[in-house]
Length: 390
Ligand code: GLY
Figure 1 (cartoon, rainbow, N blue to C red):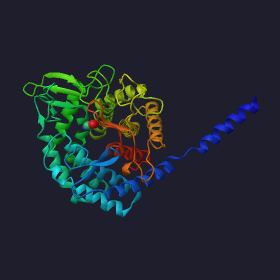
Figure 2 (figure 1 turned 90 degrees about the vertical axis):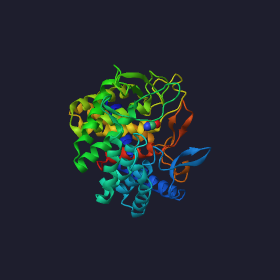
Figure 3 (figure 1 turned 180 degrees about the vertical axis):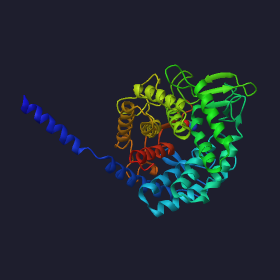
Figure 4 (figure 1 turned 135 degrees about the vertical axis):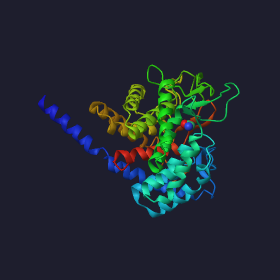
């Protein structure tokens, strides 16, 4: 009996020693990322950025697409990890492409576009030449705030069938980081106050009893009353669209980090509890937690990467050490799945994107089971956070 036990222990130890270390895994992924993203740049013009794959070919976007900041942002992350000066030049060049987008807020996405590009350029290099567009963009974004509602407006468009007046989507929590960053840079209190008010209003109106979130809440801009709660990218109005849950987790974790308001930490922990309870065993969510055809439907690597990055951050912020361990082990599992052959591209394939298998908008039949720049961005960010480099 004792002999079998010893054999078992020896076997487990051998298995453990075979497992790739976090550092070796990050070395491997960043090597691929650097090769893929450097090769990607050769396909771009002065005004185009990568978007996804369509009909087996690279699909580009112009800088006004909501994802325009993620490619330059990923290049900054690769530069941070590798110190490769060629990558730094690409990061600078691709950051400058989105400059016009930092001057006018077509939508709340000015936060994603600016903070991932110029925001990272400033944080990673410390060069103040990157500072002013961050401040300009925050002021432009702040013009979307309506004090009757207590939120910044997400989109200007309204689908005919829904007739929105003032749509606010959970994704918008991510854009508050731009306001908090700019407040630190220029000291204008209204930028921070708008972010705090938006986060509190969203906490009150977007979440369900079980900790999941609606995608869209539409408000009456005159009196702030709620007109409808619904979805745009999820399976149904009452389902839990995976990326929406991921944005919520990341957004409240970030707002606690930036403000120290414990209500945001509690909200982030509620969302984390909900997510961990519903993730599949490999950690990568299906595109909607309530998709009726699970498991015969698409995974969303982007949601997996965003959740992993947020959970690592949350594990560092929560005083609950037991919860922290759970957050970290979940994130590690997600990162390991994404770093395996099912999700991680080999050099030269996947039109030079890093990850495969994300979903943009399944109900709109747009970007289904394809690479997406934000999946790559939050995956690299998660790895940097795991190593304590961010
Ligand atoms: N913010 C849009 C999306 O997550 O698809």
